[in-house]
Image (tube, rainbow, N blue to C red):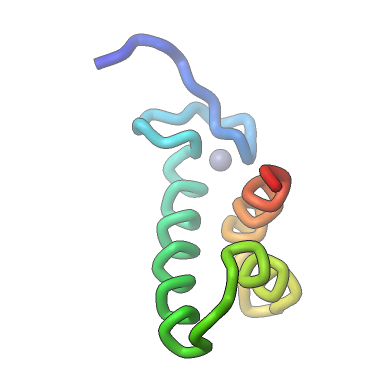
Length: 76
Ligand SMILES: [Zn+2]
């Protein structure tokens, strides 16, 4: 166990898991990754970034997920 305090990279909450995200954003991130696999399966070729770009435009995507998309997009 590490005593190093981590902060969620998408908000100011503390991150208690090994994740770079807090519980809410971590859940959203897992969701995002799961959905990506479904999309790859359905569309064949879609890059992670293309997927994120499409998803952020969708109204049915929750705010937590959108926060994660913004953070993930910045990495590129
Ligand atoms: Zn967070």
